[in-house]
Image (spheres, rainbow, N blue to C red):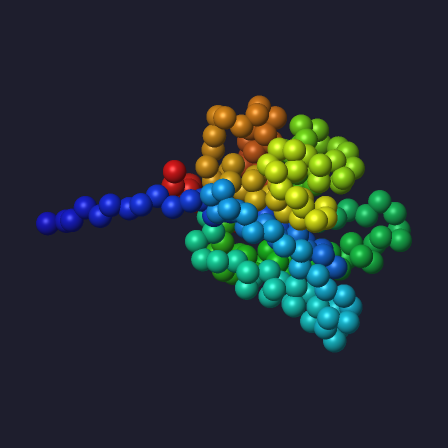
Length: 196
């Protein structure tokens, strides 16, 4: 005879990551609680470029508790001029290492375009980073210390919207999430969603 086990719903734990060589934005959202941080490094933080990338990924991974149901990570930076190509290559390497760490840990995640972060936060897919910082404060009361934290916050809210679909979101946010689910890369994602 089977015994029915009552399970207490737990708050949805979601994560937003805005990867950067100098200031990675990290936002862990658990119900109404938010843990927001900028993980900083410099070229002197490690003996070489690969060691620095590994250090950043390691610092992110050690901050992630078990039970995170969904993560959103910002997609790669696309340079607008030749002077940015070197930085873009390093950011692609960092982003790939972070994705592999999440993938190897079996964590579900979506890769989100920068324009989708802006649209979810502001209703428009364009605009200065300072607008996202302002909207994060206006919409959710988050006092982000920089644009990396602001983007990570939006990504954590997006991860929550993916894991716990809600008709109470503004239409532009629902449309953004639907487009992400349909068109953006995702890994380790199943049909499971957060409880309550």
